[in-house]
Image (cartoon, rainbow, N blue to C red):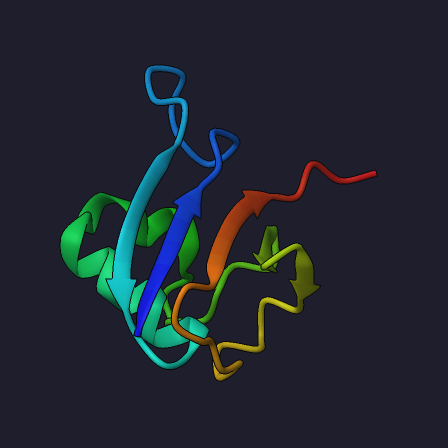
Length: 89
C-alpha cells in the first residue's frame, strides 16, 4: 500500500519546510520504519531509544489524530500520515 508521509516543518531544521515522501506499509509503525530507512536522520526526531514514537509528536492520519503509542494502527492505500511536533499548551 502506498502511503503519503509528511514530516511537518515543526520537526525539521529551519532550512527544510517539510519532508514528503511515499512509503509502503500496512501500519503507522511500518510506514515510519520505511521513512527512517529512506531518511536515517529523522529517526531521532520520531523515535526514542526504545523505538517508541516520541510523545511530543502528533500523528495525524487523514486529518484524524491518533496517540503516538498506536504504532499498530492500520493504514490504507492512499492514506496520508502527518507527523507534527506538539507545541504544548
